[in-house]
Image 1 (cartoon, helix red, strand yellow):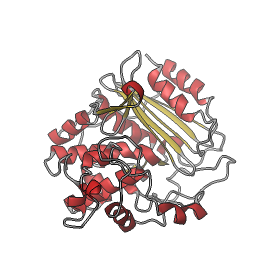
Image 2 (tube, one colour):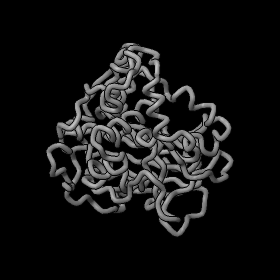
Image 3 (cartoon, helix red, strand yellow):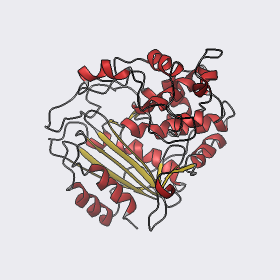
Image 4 (cartoon, helix red, strand yellow):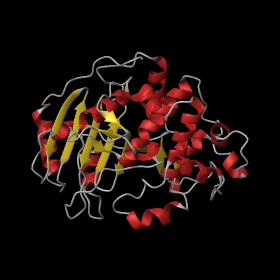
Length: 353
């Protein structure tokens, strides 16, 4: 297994950055909060929150990433393409269920369509909601396993012709995960570990809950705890759990200025590929996307980012390519309309020279 060279250990960082994070933290109300910044490998981490800290430091706890798991799926696909094992234009149905009769629009859906939310599939399968609604605040995904996700895809009737419209879809990215597992003959969890987590040295990143006391506990808006997330068959779309320090390692690999660099050419190629813009959407094509990141312009250059939320946690990942700046943030309170978490983390990424 190829690996990256050693990444920097956590250091206090600069006093100016420490003050910036402390000030930003005051804008976020959560039982547990971690704001972490890396500048050319020099890390500054601020932890806090309204809850009493536990025996494991907050920055060493694993947090649920929700939709911020998708950049991991994107990097995995990009590396498999770089290795020649699959192609972006491969048709998902042909890899997932060769010869199975599907709707013509489904037959045209490619791996690229699934990852870039241009497949024409809805956000979730239509038959997901009847089983999910009765347990919406506790376990909406656990009762919808992988085989059901695959069946829903094979009998789907896309709303739009693949490649013509952008519509955010957990369903599509989940299908991508099952398709890559089928194409490689390797379970998704094993494939992700082999191709992304182990090579990048992400020892504190996983897709299932860890040993007791090592996972952060999410909370509802009123502060009551919620169970750990069970993603059911939607693993690729939202199952990753990671410590803030591992999140920085993941982001540092993308900045092009990390202390370590990939020793495998396919991994290096994949890290470059996922930062390249591939589509624009919206009024005057104002919204830019790479294979898996949202991209915005700033006075300091483009930023790439992705946020995620689960039943009781939130996460934000972002970086500025080529500058060595990366921001990772986690919080253990469910998102709400007046929530300031994402705006605060985004500000650290976009408003800092």
